[in-house]
Image (tube, rainbow, N blue to C red):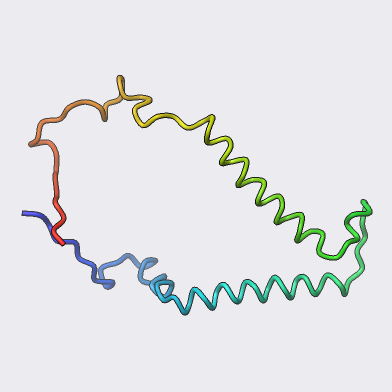
Length: 115
């Protein structure tokens, strides 16, 4: 007999119960809009302070915002390119892997999900 999964939030760990508010799409929308506001305020503050720069390009308004975005995008693109070279097949370690060994059925805890 398959064990039923208890989806009662009261049985969640403390951190899981604390983060339950993130399940609400309205909360996620507020968080995203808050991040937009913070970015806009930080960009606007770039007009109101003196910058002591070492390179001329740093004087442009919003330079660090644009630089940060480009570098973040470059990291993601580099990771995708590296994945092509570094990724191995699922059976890469298979011949000598203990997970590839056949186990008797009585050693396996097989559970079925009946929805």
